[in-house]
Image (cartoon, rainbow, N blue to C red; front, side):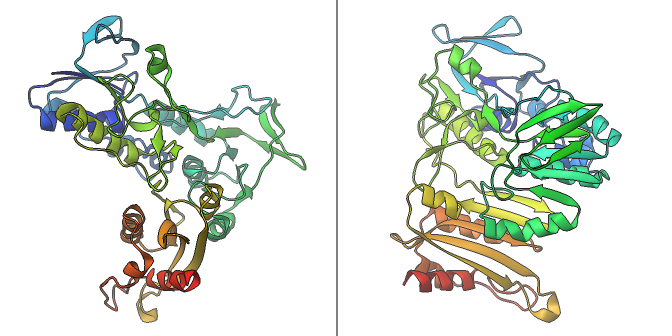
Length: 438
């Protein structure tokens, strides 16, 4: 079997590895427009913060070589000839039996009047962007970051680590990380950010931007911000131009339309990663999900299905994420309370702060917000903030949401306890939520 994979990011890498696991004889060709691949796409900001160097964030150089996977770097795929089952890449033709589209996403530029490209930057998964910023950031001392999602947060942290004395973080929503946090939870982190010298402009209504005397001016209704640089971190759009050119169906959110096996409207072509139209696991409503973990999962599912014949359905996303900000780990899964209500759910929520251990053993606090569907009595969202590691708690909550575990069942779970480790800190929230539902 001949398999061509367009895109060598997390989805393409995962897909190629899974195909090789299942078919030792498959001919696998991976195509990338980039000159370097194999890095973890969410890690360049850590290099910009001085926490790592470029060599630290690359996967082993021999990943593709050891699996007998041919990689074509700096090679653009310009056409998919579906009738001939052949692609044109770098001016040459490559036949395929199965094809995976994983070209990722393209940073979105907001329609702000006055943007001219001068000292205005985005950050994509292309490591070339990160290398360029590594040279540019040290030359200046002030910046405005437009977009308070995960990428905006990472850029902001990099600027503070780089010694910037003026950093403004702006977003049209009323709080940071609006896709994962409600205002009551976000405010706990926003206070810490303000103490570190970051000025939050939330919500922000940007009238225009102008360049003047080597400076960038962000014009707001009541003030004007003068900075050296502007970072545009307002999201990304699925890279679907090649799919559209080939006549592959695009979904309502702008991503490539796929079925539960990640198969496109062409049965011999699959899609994975940021380019596809995702759906949320709770209601099945269509959404975009631009996260490296989701890209890796969908890549593996697509690789398995094209090899084994649509045996593994993809169930959608819980929109789970985690980030670290000034020593605080912040994570979420499922809907925010705001989004749940927008989707028409009758929800009840509770916000609780519980110690993770006994006072004489550190007494770190874990803040958590639980959101439940009144009709089903199950969780549809969770948000967690703590100075402790939250991965275990977040995984527990993600599983409860995905499996629709009744709250009364969660309250009866047998969980471990030790004075040095503490008890399950979400027990208080679950019991309070049950009380409110009753």
